[in-house]
Length: 564
Image (cartoon, rainbow, N blue to C red; front, side, top):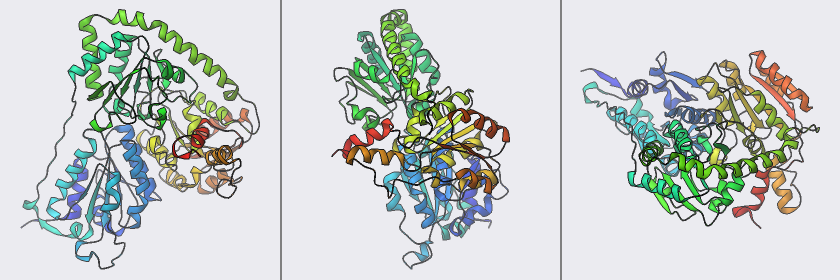
């Protein structure tokens, strides 16, 4: 009777799903899977920390909308992965985390790295699975894959006890499943009501979030705004589904960004909220005109009505719904009527956007030394001006400054930590982006605090020949916390907020990369040019003004549970 080993079944399940990379850090409990992935079509991509491996898988899922796969060993390998898993959960990113664990026969014997892992991870994944029969390994991987991509995407945890992986079973006892499907539920009556509410509106706004990106709704949304003349804002991984350069797209929905969002949110009479959540980003709904009607569309029913009463809740796939809306507009022949009606509203938003950006111009063009961080963000935005350029942001204030500045021309080409706000994503995200798109320029802007979390991923980048350019916004410490403390209690607590001048560029040089040091704003662009021309992983250490307070710091000091 032909026998097959559990590790081989797990490896074959990964291979047969067409997975390109498994992001991982090796360990004894997962060696049985490594053994059969070696020399296969699946590449084992090893990082220097399990957290970095899972962040790379998260970035992969964000960019491709297919599950990134990470694999870690038991105990500390598992716990090291938790922050990145929580990040994927909050960003609704498809991901499969495979973890080894102590063998069933050794449970509760104080074996190496023994712990109960499932109760720890269950609250931060879509589903947590443990396979306890070797012959069912392919079924469990299929279940994990389907769960990660169905409905609202998210991370799935899949645990294999090491003795299950090492055991052999008759091959004819193994059931292999592989189901692929596209689920596009659409509420046709809801689409009709949206158009009716749009016809009754004078000042509508559309906000498209991660659900629009997940459902590939970009072209449908462009058609929708061009048929109606309604303005659109984008958020989170939905940034770029309609390019910022489109005349009806007013960029990010974040009110702290220079542009038209703040005035539009406060004066709109109809909000069409597509595939995003009523979170801190909208002051939990309080930023919007209280008299405005609210349409909330989401694939997950329980998300509708969070923090704010909804006039029309629709459970639907965004692409399918907007496609239906476009059909209704054509059938009713109301396109020109709507465009004419909303033209003055577009003019108002554009005027407020221009005025807001004019006010930010002095910071974007600042000649101050130390360098204003907005000037640094603007230099990066101006330099990374190709449609295919990828920019990654990491850090508290740093992500705020870049988010206030970046012009996004293509979806999936701007990555930051999103709603969970976890530092440390920068190096793994950037490495994943360069791995996925080796011919595209990848630039990470990272705070000097956050670069310390996964600094050795510079070595991963160099070893794996992934020439990314990393710009460090060096304000000598934990700027967002420092400034929020100053605002809240009158002074910064030095212990815990001050790091000091660290020559990060020299550390990268010692690892085999290129290091550059910048103190003057006029030297930023030449440094970017030199870094990219070098063909090496490069670190540009930029000294920025430690006294500049971002809107993010102000929000941290004044919102929610941080209020005195």
